[in-house]
Length: 256
Length: 299
Image (cartoon, rainbow over all chains, first blue to last red; front, top):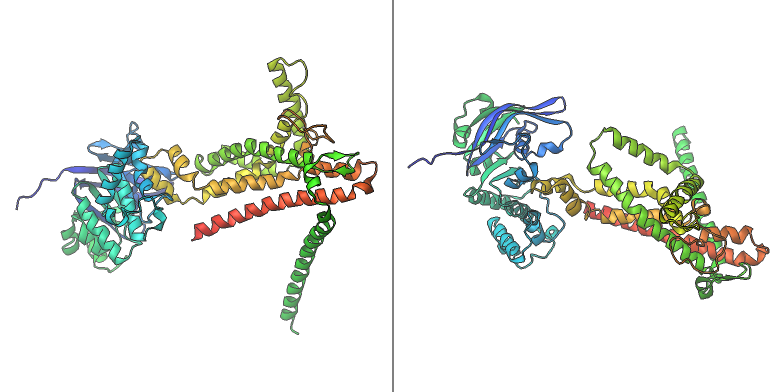
């Protein structure tokens, strides 16, 4: 079988993140490949979410957060002073741990991003909303009640709505911060299926506490521990033949 | 009986007494005015002007003046209070100097006696702003440089600003962080997030703030004493530069400035009842809305 060539989408070089005096990430260097699913694993507080949130500069919102080093997307350092953070976030979508539908209709939730981009034409919006909901595997469940409040959806549906909302602005990267941790197993399975579908179009980075999930959906896995990147490799290798003892201890459930 | 049980007995006893005292105070006050005032509440009272040195007729001009006053006050005060709350809550980082100064000012403002606000209103709005406006428009006679509905409303707006700021801030704080982050992560600017996500989720809080401010200010007499209220008027105010009558001040006039105080007694009771009803209704509405928001956020 011919191996497909990997293009680097996100490239971190010596990336450090500080919250005030506390250093949360220590000189992280790794490449994330285009149209692959990369999983970040590690115990709570290990820095995996911090790293995820530095990819769309969400950490900028936290008082006292500082970044040093380099984080490139398509070869451009996103911490360069010339970067427009708002534009960056349109290219790097994010799905949060807690599903956060806006208290608006399903339609208005998905149309929120496109409208920010100045799309007002109703047919165009209709098309984007439908397409995004189809992409998020939600359309069939909600097509008859697009004007109903998003708050009435089930937890799993809400999370898929958040995914639809994120893909509606047509990003190239999708960040997922423990997207299934609040969902039941059936909803989790649906979201995982969706992730595998979405990777055809998007570069996906997912933070998860669920080892099986990382093994199921990701091609590459990075193991973080106490702010350091311990090991980064093919998911299969991380789970079957890890190079470091800490990794083995963690994936086999001996700690964390 | 052991000492422990004795202490417990006294604790419960004093608490019960305190409750009875407070409840009794409320019931007796309200009861007095209800019993004495209710029979005198009539369509005539609510719709007619005072006659015969305030001993006959109604209190319509005072109701009209009070309503107009709090309306103009809300139009002036709520936007300023809301904008201040947005600035404090959304645009400042904790520990910065300017927001701390503003917060200190707001808290101090809340503790200033209302008569001082009245003097401030006279000095700043009437004698400084009013005179300035008249000069700028070249008015030969004083149109704005005299006590007026606008200046009284502005003074009350200053008085109630802390109430508005605190309630709006509380509402803004209740909008979940995740909701803001989701909006920002979709490429919304900070202002777009405030305008499209945070504010629509805080409308009830802003409403509560304005109702509380109205409830607080509807009965205040001291701030308007120098800035616009009058004893009696031949006609209703025809604009914000007119002077006006006011329920609270009218009560004072009825009970102290009448040649025959005994004759005005029924009117005094009725006027008090109207004023109480007005402020109680507003406060109750605010409490109701607030509890609705709370239960919605918990559920």
